[in-house]
Every structure is written in structure tokens, then in C-alpha cells.
Image (tube, rainbow, N blue to C red; front, side):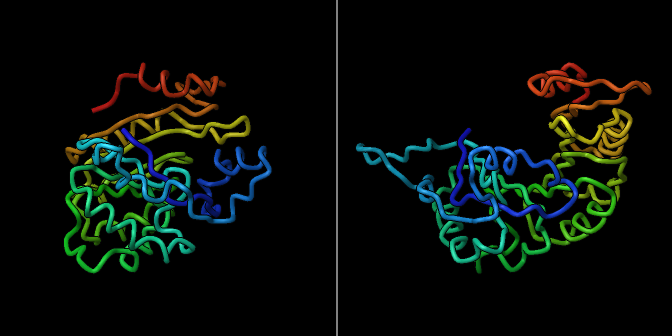
Length: 235
């Protein structure tokens, strides 16, 4: 696994961004998250060592722009270079998440065609309104590997009609002292929808405020992922 952040900074875009940990962390360090800047890590996938070998070894999954959005407008001038590196490193598997799926068609390279084999796109949704808007767009896009990321999940949602050609659905709650609660029934509902359509499902993390069997629990942030794993409901 490798992380690649060719730029940093992002803007809050919808309800799921309210308690964004990137904005919160930047605020503590006096950094303006709304300023999008290219990083020193821009050329990471093609950097080589003294032996002339790529530093990122073949076969790895590269998590792209996980602290920003690969489709953010301010990065339009840099994105083409990133696509060229992604194409050069066809031996790596790149994955990025986006809340801006409506920009996808204007952000892809000329030779995208039906998609690159080594690129997975995760469309992030948090409520029914954003699910209906974003996933209806995702369903029509030429992408070979599609994921849906329901994190933070803010309400019960129905996404079953959007699951054609989707490889994985990830569900998780919000991690913040002021976090909006995650109801376990919502998680199980999405799991059932995935079972009906034969799609992989992963419960990635509980919410800080977690409701199960009508009782609300307050969980330690460090335990959110381990508690979700203990549920043993991934398929």
C-alpha cells in the first residue's frame, strides 16, 4: 500500500464534510485547508532509486488524494500529468474517492475510452439526496472499477438500484466528539442491498456515537475500526 498526494487542500462540499478531520487537523496547525497547493510528492509514482528502480514497488495499491479530492477544480492544471504517471505505472492499482463525480467526464484524459484497468473510482455519499444525485451519474460513467463509499453515513439510504457494475460498498460512521450518530440498522440495510445484488460489502468503522438495538453508545475514536471488524458482517 502507498499514499500519493500530488496536492493538498480541499473545500467542504456537502453535509458529509461538516466534521472533516483534515480541516480540523489543519486548523490546529494554523493551515488554511481551502488553499489548494501542489505538493513536493507530486511525482511520487515515477521517482526511482539509485538503481533506476521505481521506489513504489510493482503490484501495490496506491491511495490517491485521500486528504483532498482528485477532481477538485483548482487541480485541473495538474491532473493531466497525474494521468500520464498513472498510465506509465500500469503495474500499480490506483484508487481515489470523490464527492465531485459530476466533474468526472471533464477531468479524464483523451485516451480514457472505457476506463483504465488500473484505476478504481470510489464515489462518496452520505445521505439519500447525495446518493441519488451522485450515484445516478456514476452509473452512466465509463469506469472499469467502481466503489461506493457511504462514510460518514448520516441516515438510512437505499442504493440498491445503483449497484450494477459496482465492485465494493464501504460503510462507516463519523469520528468526532460532535459526530452525528450512526445507526447499526442503516449499516445492515445497506449490507442486505449488497447481498441482493451480489456486491462486496465492508463495514469499515463505527461512529463515535453508535446506535444499536435502540441504545446509543459513545466509542473511543481509536476503537471505531476494531469494533466494526468485531461485528463480522463483511461479505
